[in-house]
Length: 152
Image (tube, rainbow, N blue to C red; front, side, top):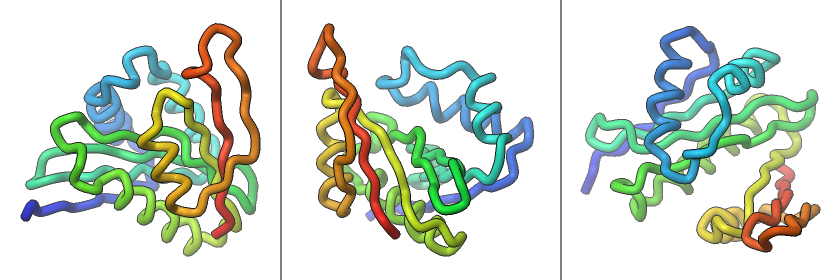
């Protein structure tokens, strides 16, 4: 049995942004990801939450989100490094984020994913997220963007 810890961060210092960059680049699906400036801009605009999952003290995954209005928290980015997949970390991060959002008074969590991430989509549906919209990608159905939400 592994020792798993989830660390929550709500104050975004330069060191925290360095941590985000470190964990962000460990997720291969983000190779064409967001620039660090955009990440900073979104997280500094208002209340935000970074969750970092550690296995035996080693950073294994993360989840980032921020407030979009007084009632809605947007679960923006997250992932688990390939070496740590299959341990239930993504679900643990999701559940932690939901509890935190509820404690902060949010009424809803919004999230987006793509068809090419079936594990993420299946996890969201298993956790009572509902598909509310889809944006088609004319080049590839795997890139269709699905919008989901859950009332908490």
